[in-house]
Image 1 (cartoon, helix red, strand yellow):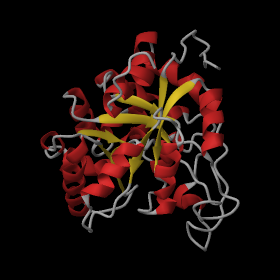
Image 2: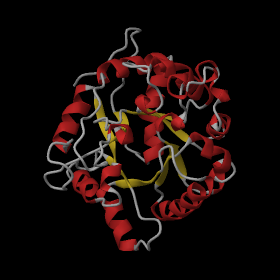
Image 3: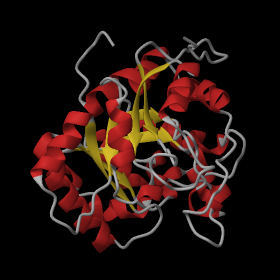
Image 4: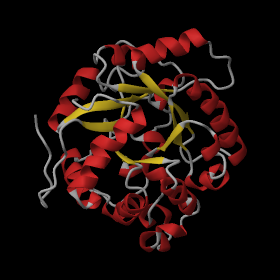
Length: 305
């Protein structure tokens, strides 16, 4: 097994977690014949960076059809967890939820990206949390960071663990054009509320998918101030995620939309993974980021794996 080691000597520890990957299997679950990220490829990728456990998140290209997720989870012998996406406007029967839970689902995702109104997001957050409570699942939020101003007083009342995707969508100056964001992340609307929720142990944040918030390729190094601020104020509330296989999201869509073939992003996973422990700062914090925190988030109780 390859254990990634930063130049500082900090290492990704054994039993590490990758809290955000996708499986796209167009041969079994049609999408586009040339756009695939199979479970076999996922296992090879995770092994190459020293990861033992991963969380498969249903990609947006499948909408609310969780078939690929459930099928992939059943092949991992309980070592992976899953995050589903549900139609929150429909009735969801307990049998379906139990089937998902038995397969390894431990979360439900609200997927707005950088869109959605505060009213829509708040309503879906409350509805999704009511479903998550049934099996003690995680509520995963992919929403604009500004939404956390409205969610700030709601999240502590939900009675579930909550995690924000991709730096909580805190964008740097290379994306926003606002130079203040490169110096003071608290100038980003909603960032102060995110940090407060982390301080009070109400919100986990994924250090993941830097390209969603930065254009500073290839390592998106301008996110360092955001990452270090999140880690400083919420050392027990941050988890690592690769976002493999690095879908291009709406930016990569052609005229035919998201179901038309597109290339995955070209990302240097090894370099980013070597950079992440440096941002964490200490070996103890690296362990929290990759092992201790994701275990608590995803309800993993086996301390020997």
